[in-house]
Length: 449
Ligand code: GLU
Image 1 (cartoon, rainbow, N blue to C red):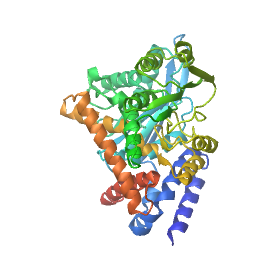
Image 2 (spheres, protein in one colour):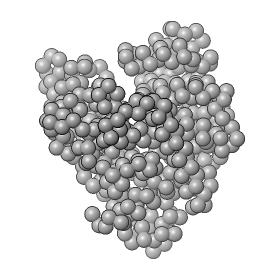
Image 3 (cartoon, protein in one colour):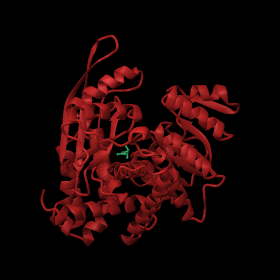
Image 4 (cartoon, protein in one colour):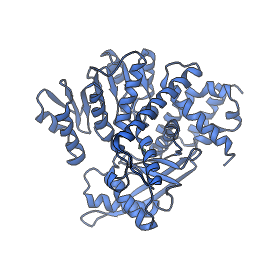
């Protein structure tokens, strides 16, 4: 059977099996669309049914999470952990706490994580978890009761050598702290079973900054392939969560001028760009006060808050989507291109729709998928695990050096895999191919398990 027929039949069977899992299908379709030359050169992957095996999580845990709010009312959320692939190491990936969380979303995120973790070259398998619990608008004690209840079930299934959760949307150091506390209580074991811990009790310095910094380092690498740099480049960063804020910080430090960013309420257009004072304000607003960007335009002259509006109409050289999946559509891509954007570096997971990616690739601009350019977060999680097992702490500078080296290596792997398989300059193909081959070969080595 030729490769085209094989992949068509494979994708048809995938869709038929779980017809409602649309975002998961989108993630698999993207990967498979770039793997044909690999399957042609190495038919063993077809014979070993690697695609059929790699799309199926090794294990999925779904459980009830009951908790009480501050008024004593009882609520029931649903908890998940998708333990996707352990060919390269224990399952590793974040927890998403957001009302949009479903099994579909976590399968897409877990699938992406397998490839991303492989690209870091660290010994990490892939997984993802979370709940449809929304941390927004909840008190600290409500979040704590929820996290404790969540772990009352999940602690059976995770552990330092098995599965190491971390944060994601709605899950930061506060939530990791509550989950770790309950895990430790139930297991009587202080191990690095979570990453993203606070540095004063086991976390790695630079972990909060790592994803955002990694995005900026990757963008710098991409521009360097054109003999260019971030110096004086106008940049847009969409989300202003953990990834977005630190992407803004590093882009600025590397000479870029960040003029647009957004949150759930709307976006800011600040043609003067973010400076150190504005960044300090943003960090306090987002991380401490958990407030809205509306406050930014009241505080800084020349900034405009645009209620309910996204950032993509703001002219820029470099765009870093850092909010959530499918946040950048075909029409947004066209607008960015019309306004002269030359580099799109993804900070969130699968933020660009297939139509948007096609538009960027047709226009021939630099485009990198999140699984490559946002891998800095999980990479520093891997370093946190190393520090925990060695019982040492590395300085910020040491971690930053590792991070830069890892991001440079990922950039290099993407470009060389793309070139080797006849798709020069295509970061999406390169990331998928390099990530896939490492996992596929390990699966073959380990036999049919
Ligand atoms: N949630 C992050 C990601 O999408 C980090 C995962 C981790 O550190 O384990 O890669």
